[in-house]
Amino acid sequence: MKQQYDQILVTPKPFVKWAGGKRQLIPILTQNLPESFGTYYEPFLGGGALLFTILTGKNGQKCSISDLNSDLVLAYTTIRDKIDALITSLKNHEKNYQKDSQSYYYSVRENNPKNEIEKTSRLIFLNRTCFNGLYRVNSKGKFNVPLGKYSNPNIVNEDNLYAVNRILQSNRISIKCRDFEAVLRDAKKGDLVYFDPPYQPVSTTANFTSYTTKNFTYNDLTRLAELCLKLDSKGCNVLLSNSNSKEVVDIFSKNPWKILKINANRSINSNSKKRTGHFELLIKNY
Image (cartoon, rainbow, N blue to C red; front, side, top):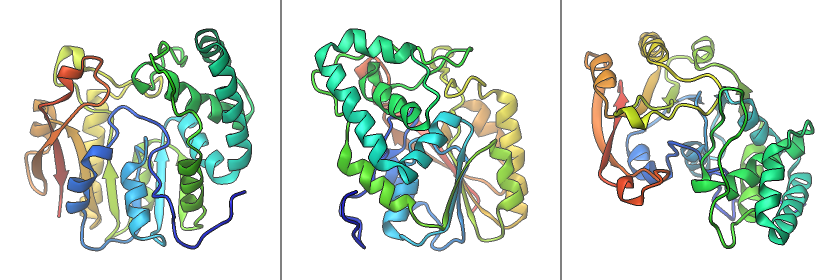
């Protein structure tokens, strides 16, 4: 393994492109964090952009992160525990992809490895080479995105994977696969809970909630809103990202919620002209 350094030489960034990823909103999210907080909870982990930003600024921060997508959670633990074997596997994918990208991509997409390293390697490989870097599964749980048009995709982003590995080594970070409501058992007064769920659609064509085979419905949104109120009554700091939709505004229009409307581009819209000029909401109780 590469020599370990005390400081982080490469700032870790999300190792997968995830629908609703927060990299471009990091400046405004960090401006809206509480000045101090206890444990950081993120129950819809996704690409983890805010997590990596918080950990880079405060390497000893206690974090409890989770997601319902078991393949994604496995990817985080594999990068933490088996980085060298994972990079070897990714280099193998890269070599085969360069020989015949089309047939190799679809053979990997059809494949369903049981080995943890191969599962994670497949997820990262497909994410790096599929159309628009979009993770999506169908109702049967099968990844169904076509091959993207890339001349030289960065399949093995070795420096970043090692940076993510180093930052996840802390014994103050726990990674779990579970439903978002489980956070209520653990979060205490003064902790920060950041929710970044699949967004409520703002139009009939904008409905993208298939990160897992279970869709995130309006009922889930109301369940989330009730959970946020329970966390508020426990004295937790609650921060929530969502779309600028009527349903979200209506649910969070009363105290204790403050709603901020922020400018956000959409990095995965297939039409690049539709990626700009969007607003989304940042909702908080502090």
